[in-house]
Amino acid sequence: MSQSYIEAHKAEEAVRALEQKVSLLMTKNREQAGKNESFEKKIHELEKKSEDLDVRLKAAYFNTNLAPLSNSEHNALSRHLNALIPPSSHHQNLHPLHSIHTNTPLKNFPRKESDIRTMSSLDVNNLLKDLDAQTGRKMDAGERKARLKEVIGVGERSSVVQNPAVVDSVDGVKQDGGEKKKEDEKKKALPGKATGPPPGKVLPIGPKD
Image 1 (cartoon, helix red, strand yellow):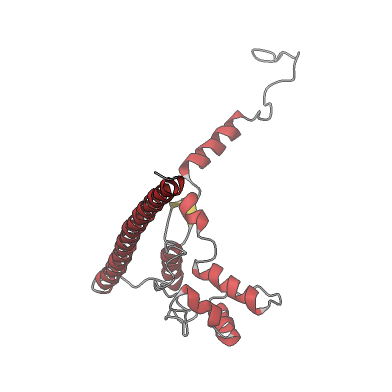
Image 2: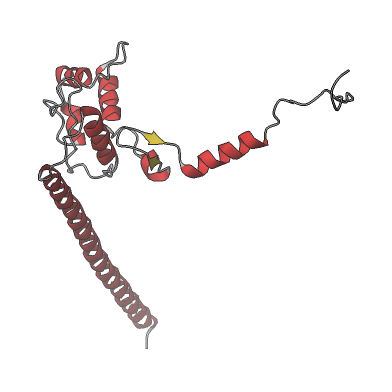
């Protein structure tokens, strides 16, 4: 058997081995693609359920005989719900806030967070005015839109997930119970002002002559 024949046979075996590896990689890629598609489908289903639940909660609220919320209560609740929307859920609708003057839904309120980027300066200014959220200083278009995001609850959402606070009422949030307890213990440990006699002085006992 010639040397060239042996080398050709080895080359064919190497090619077949390489083809097997390529086929295996393609199979794994197809399997991974199927898993990704299934994962994305589950995420979409969860977001759809969340939206359905939100609709049911709103329907249940309007079907009750409870007194309507004040504008501050409604806005605090809407901000809280907006803050719970994941930043990646660009297609999920925001919860609109109410005007502090009329307690009615704000006109031209952004339907989604991504809509804020394309809002006109006039609409942004009107929303800030209706929410009494103007800072009193001159801001450019980007700063005004960032201010609007902050006011409606989608400005900084990482703190909502990482540092959950105890909600005391619809209007406000009080300090977390554990942190408050630590502060109270620190205050008790601090030395207070002395109320007894100065060192070395003994107070008389009994009636003074």
